[in-house]
Image 1 (cartoon, rainbow, N blue to C red):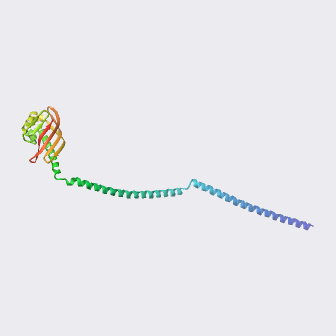
Image 2: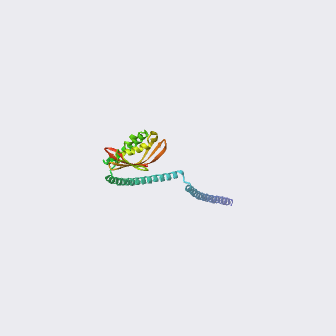
Image 3: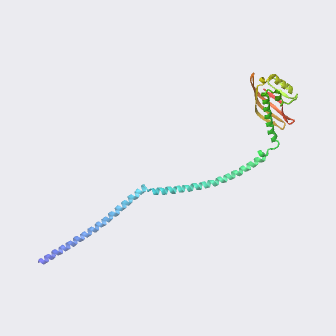
Length: 245
C-alpha cells in the first residue's frame, strides 16, 4: 500500500514536473516570438524615422553631386548657345561685309577717293593755299606800315573796283590814294587782322573770299567785313574787286 502511494506520489511529481517543464518551454517560445515581433517593429520604426530624416535633410554629398550636375549641364548649354550664336554671327558678318564691299564699289565708281584726285582738283587746293598766303602777306605788310607792299596784291589797272561804305572807287591809283588819306602814318595803320571765313574757287582763274577785318590804331578799334574777288593773271592771284565795310 505504502509502495503504491509512493509510486503514485513519484508518478505525480514526475508528471507534474513534466507538465511544468512543458509549460515553461512553451512560455519561453512565446517570449522569443514576441521578442522577434518587437524587434521587427522597432526596426521598421527606426528605418522609417531614418528615412524621414534623410528626406528632410539630405547629406552634403547629395547636395554637392546635384549642384555639380546642374553646373555641368548649364555649362554645356551655354557652350552650345555660344557656338550657335558664333556661327550665326560669323555668317551675318560675312553677309554684311559682302554688302558693304558692294556698296563701297558702287560709291567708288561714282566718286573718286583721295588716292585718285583728278588734275582739276589739285589746282583748286593749291589756289586756296596761295590766296591764304597772299592775305597773310598783306596783313604783315600793313602791320609793318608798308602800304606799297600791301597794294602789290591789287590788280594794277584802271578797272580795279573798291566798294566801301560811302562810295565806289575805280582804278589802282585811286584805291591807293584812299588808303593813304585814311592811314597815312604807321600809327594810323596800327595793327590789322584778317579772319578768313571762306574761300570758294570758281573755275581755274576765279576765287571768292569772304571774311572779317579788324584794325587797332592810335584812334581806336575799327572792324568790319569784306568780300574779295581774286583772278589769276600771269600765274598770280590778284584782287580785282574789294568790297569792304
